[in-house]
Length: 132
Image (cartoon, rainbow, N blue to C red; front, side, top):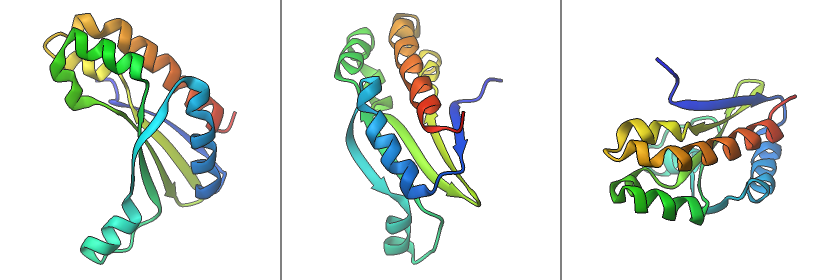
C-alpha cells in the first residue's frame, strides 16, 4: 500500500522550518487559510506537553474550485494540510498526498488532474524545505 503522506526531514530548527514553509508556500501557489498550534492546543486543553507541531491549512483556490466542481464532497478533504513537527534532532514536514482524494471521493477519476497538480506543487515545497 502506498503511503497516504509525502514527507521530508531537515536538520533545521522547528522555527526555521515553519518560517521556510510559510515563505515557500506562495512560491508553489498556496496560501495559508488556517493554522493550528498543536503544542499550545494540547497544553491548554489536556495539560500535556508535546514537541512543537503546527498544522497549516494551505489552499490554492483554483485547485479547490476545480476539485469541488468535479465532486462537491471532496470539500471535506480541503484544504491541503501541511504539518511541521519537531522530532528529536530533526524537523519533519508532511502533507497528505493529494492522490488520496482520488481514492476516497466517488468522483475520483475526475479529480486526477487536480490531484496531480497539487501533488507536483507540494512535492516542490517539500524539496524546497528539506535537506537536499
